[in-house]
Image 1: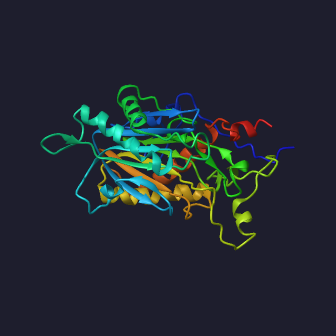
Image 2 (image 1 turned 120 degrees about the vertical axis):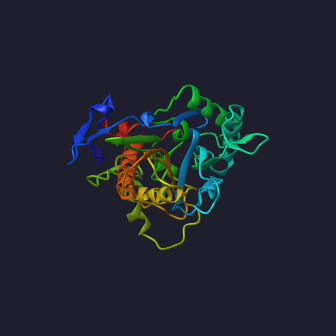
Image 3 (image 1 turned 180 degrees about the vertical axis):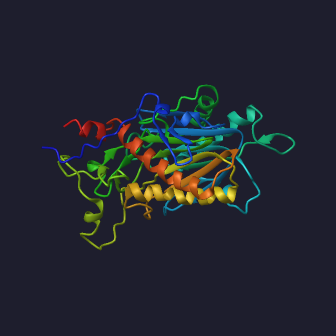
Length: 350
């Protein structure tokens, strides 16, 4: 008999049908992430190799902040998002696989954007400001295949011309896995997930690539939904309990893990405020992933705004944590089993 939980996970066909009312009468409804204002999302992947790229583009620029809590990030141009840096907007955020090897994907995104006259005007051309964070997926498919400029270019093209975003084993989520403390033999397949809410005119959404060392929990009821499996894959083990069995230093925690995400909002927030929003969104990680923010995780969250809607900063941050936790659930239940790693939707059929 399986020891897996069977959490209810319902996603409506038209997410706009899910509605609530707050105490001032503003309608609260779930919306597709692709309905977020002024941000286009595209992705591409090499399914055979188990890696891919997801690109978010703001053609007119996106005010952006960043908060990195993990000890081992693979990233590019992060300093652009420091509140002291001169740049007030970026034009694209790249989420990719391939660890540090995949950071070249941003070159293709820059090539695509420059050809379309999108970027910071320096007189002789426009320089697209592109930031990137990658997960470690080299132990999943073909370690010799990493996201490159061609893959970045194609994902950017899709963002601007096709908007082909999908949850699951797509884009940067192609090679995502969780529950790796005991090795890849007992981990689970996850992917990329999204979730977004609209309250009146305010929109807050999240996209996350779930690739954690730890176990994943439903943030509302505390039930484990993915993570470290027993040796016979018949149920779950606790990563935290396994860690407590020895205080000996573990040199190679198989080998790197990173959950990377983006909060999107149309609230009229500054870069400094968005850095705070990104920090509050990490509460969503902490509610859903245990352990999290370890030395071998590169856990990073971007927060971007393209709008001018007046909204309370702390409300936006609170919603950011909520949509991030829901996006993590989506990344679990949208994933398909692949590369010999079972996904939650298949385990729960037992």
